[in-house]
Length: 206
Image 1: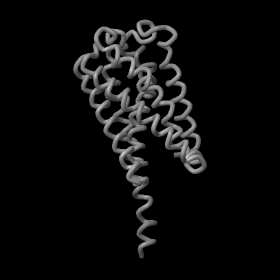
Image 2: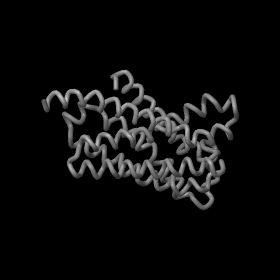
Image 3: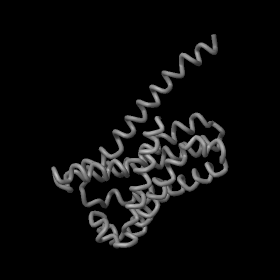
Image 4: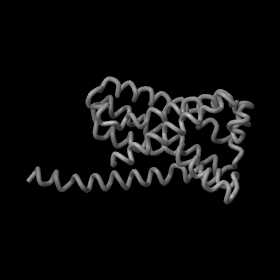
């Protein structure tokens, strides 16, 4: 990734993370009216999700900061632990919330599958790091980060398209469009990166 793109991702992630905590000032009903119905029966899951998903989003860019990894490896590991715990708790909360969404079954399946894949990819990344398989760890962290960044793409899509097609319609669509294209893009980038490295590896083996 270019430096400009990395900075843009970091700025957008931090901005959305901070904006997501607006419910601490205004309350859930005013700040997130489309999620307020979860307060009746799913309050624990709701607060786990809306409190800790922004933590994961804010921590995510720092995991890909090369200088931090090289100069402060202990800080990199602790940031990674914060990220993983935030994903675990907010992901479980999201999985609990998904079946109760007021947007219907299509959105429920989209948000539910996102939660499962987010939890699974992050758990895989953590396991690989602990096993010392750092190159594979990086690949799975990129997949996890693509889904974490779905919080940003969801809000961008809501802001752009809600005035055109209505909030209810675009909210159902973003249950899928906020993260599936992100995963497709990162898979394309990983394939291209592997293809670029293969000739170098082949020349070294010759």
